[in-house]
Length: 188
Image (cartoon, rainbow, N blue to C red; front, side, top):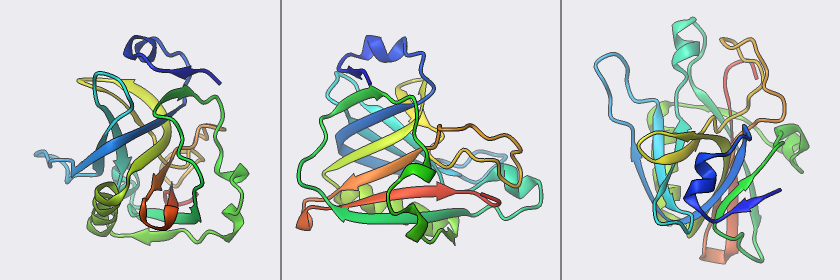
């Protein structure tokens, strides 16, 4: 796995999945547009470059809702403690699967209303000292990652992207605790 410290390299990544680690977190709910209610929380972080990166997290499935399925995101949380923090930066991550996470079989995925999930993410971003995220890279106004959820086929999406799941891991100063947030949609 290659670890990058420069923005130029991020712009040229050819991998479909990255691991992003940063601190100085700021979060906000996506602003509604004229067609849809907000369906993302945006968390910006400092990964040690001269620019902040954006982490875009789904809080509602427009595709499931439009297809007549449950649009709520299902959240599972793995809790633990940390002994050392990961280094800030961006790393290539060619494979990340919920099926291979230790303890996943014990996780209950509970459907959450959009506003409740938004508030949970805002609170964690405010309290955490560091965020580690897995997702697909993108470059718009700022570099970032998205697709931070299970990529298995769902009620409204028939294709599976094997080994390309996304997740968040928040690190907290208090009691050196950490929480890994895992996200699924209807049918996963």
